[in-house]
Image (tube, rainbow, N blue to C red; front, side, top):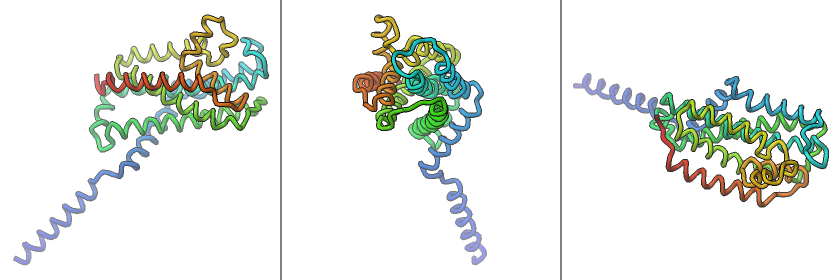
Length: 268
């Protein structure tokens, strides 16, 4: 009888230890671990790194050292850096997230992570943290390059610029999720890159709206790309928060979030 009791105690202890070992980590740890994984994955992807860092840096150097296209009155570097920062936000929050999320959905990664202890909400938060981490790195690289090229920002506009970048990130991530959750991965790949190129040339990002034909300028003012570009230029050149561009971003973000929440599919 004594022997039986000892075995029972040992079995209970082993079961307790096994349960303790198999218990899921706290939600914060799970989210941070997934955010680290998402960040490293983006940085190791050559195509994503090219779009997120290399192309914006090349665009900045080209704009500052050339005399075309016209960027309007003022020092070219002061006009170019905010536009390139806006381009970097679009590259990471929209193009990168749309493509990666679409292929994760295609290969069943989203479905598996959604039913894991991380959960769907945890996965979305982790992706948001990864995007913000990449954007912080972009800001350091592009801002540092701009300072080396002679950029003189209005530092009092740093808060306004950060707020616009944050709202713009939310808006473009919502748009990316909307795209990635409704179309096939190959379609998302083609369309996301096409939209990126279109916004680069005609969306009021690199080239200020004041230097565009009047009809196209009015259209760009209503686009999130033009709003983000205008807002960042206003913040870093004049130290002010631009209310209308911020409102445009909020409206786009609210609509994209509502549509994405209704239409997003976690698996094909």
